[in-house]
Image (cartoon, rainbow, N blue to C red; front, side, top):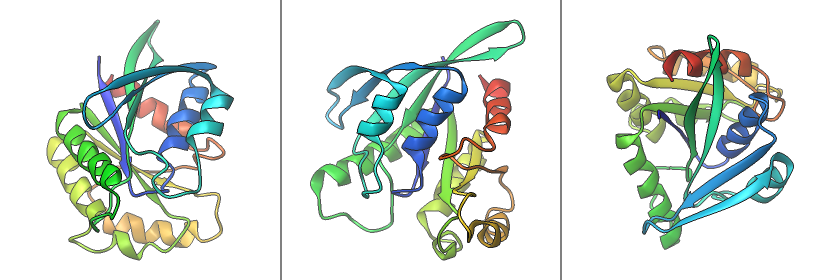
Length: 200
């Protein structure tokens, strides 16, 4: 089974994308497996609404460990299962909280073992951090492109500044396949679905 890792900075919309994409694939209930950095597993059952209420927040680093769910996508006349794994947000700075540092390390470790990288960037705010050649987003992109298993989602296209910032993102990540989306409103998800279906 192929694993798609959803990665990006804190508050870029990784968890909301993961859950709303599950809903877009007609998933009403989710079994989510939480894996702590020390390897402990905990599986919980949610309705989609319950998962969004409990797991999504505007607070930074709401997601502090890997959380995976198995989804199905139609390919031809059959449905193929794949794993979608949400992750702790990553950034350049060394965080003061130990559990967040461990969560970031867990995210970076997952990048080396997953089958595909779905990289989410927030185009609703200033795009300046994405333009630095030494920034974490550029490093994720370079790694994913080198593996030829990489998709960049320009999220929060529903916000006013997004259209101006999108052109900067397209320039900064000119080698990447970039899909504009709104995780909040599930816009652009048909294109994401087609990408996933081609790669499961």
